[in-house]
Length: 398
Image 1 (cartoon, rainbow, N blue to C red):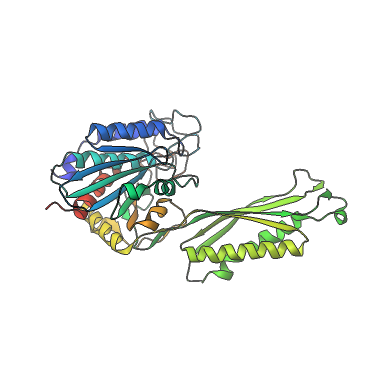
Image 2: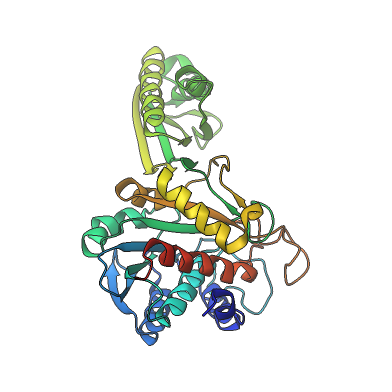
């Protein structure tokens, strides 16, 4: 059966996607979503394993006798946002919204699973359909699935994933053979002095002055430790002192985010941040406490798997619709954890320019993490076809 023919009528999957959109759940709370995915996979005769990192699950489909394996991953969680849309499938869960398209990612993988379950001889090997919880908000669902034995229980020669993204026309694929997304990290530095009345600063030790100096110094970190040929970012986004205008507090804090495309760059930045905090605190007679949290490593594709993925994409949409040297973006994705332990490739799938919004206004679905976002259902068969072709090309039938 031709894949295009299989997805000629995508209404069943549009209904699935919109039902998931209407019932968004936050990370590690995806109980309804997980139940729905498991029920559909079971209905299609796919073996289901549940309870991996809580609400995560894996569907297993075997064909033939080959020992080759492949992992296909989709994320299931939503964001803590209040949806601004007014269409019929808007969120029914207050303060919860599928504003990043994970409802669509889950649906594309379900569509691929449905298609492959109907083919007796399309491939020779084992497919692991990985439905991951808690990608958002630094909860590291991918890492927790790995810690829960994901790849020991479900060996994968390689893993692949997609994310809808504003990369141009509907259906355009974008990737590169190296770093595609940045690491995501947060820092918070607490400087402790001795509080006093603001009219008598000589009787205390002012941590606010130290925090101001540190905030300015932090802006110099990237150019001082990162080569001009390499991209990295340190942003100061939080400054906090006293709650009262006439009080010099005991404690003041500064915090923000750090993004890099390599662990080595991240190591250099963290070392410099800690040194600056200690030095400036000492200069102001304060003490410093540094919290530096590495939430997600950079998404770094493996070159061979990226080339393989790009070739499959060209089969699906044609060479002009594949950009295989897409510049890395500062956003982060915890599929990075999977790519650190298994070869594979992460890629973007173009969701359009927003002019197909059902209500005809607003920023449109291309603007992820926006309260007017809606996944573009036109790309469901494209993403599903890509997943199917990956399987057929990775594990060709004898």
